[in-house]
Length: 261
Image (tube, rainbow, N blue to C red; front, side, top):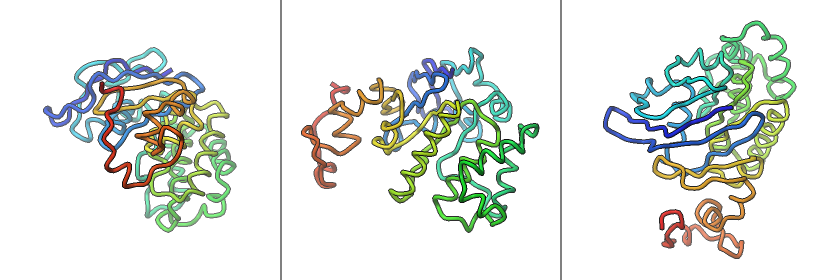
């Protein structure tokens, strides 16, 4: 199980981004981490996977433990070897390499089961099997997202962190990615799903956290969050009666969130 306790993260020694964040990802579960831009979701992922240093960030308080062991001081490669893999926001594939070459890069820390993991990825993503020799930069947005997820799975993770996997995708492709996440979880992989698309995330999650300004302001079972009036109004764009608001209504909506009262 992944546990984050009272985590504080500072960038450039002055910008406090995470303010006492605590959350858990139990084994075999899908946990949704929701929040608007700037809430601290991506920083949370970086703190877990050892990438804070790359962005001039530092954890100044709190802990990140995986299977009971502190991992916040480990280098990223060791964290991947321990069983945690991340799909970054924006996919970050190697555009000049082929699909197969990208997948091979994902197996850098786990060469022993490379063939079996490759077959597993191709079974999950038949589209990639059709295009395995194609240069990745020429894939569609949805195919690139599939490749990014497949590359992470080549490390045979026990926990998969997905940072905004639906970003920039058409509704039909979002539904595909949603179903793929469910399939991956059914294979025994825990998932931390970082999303702005609250409806998609909560529809498949077991538990959810809502972040604002670097801290958790609400958490609970996913269905409970879906039914919460504040979540519906501020993250799903719905009136209390369940009717969808117009963009103008959302933009000019002034009611104070109950968790800020």
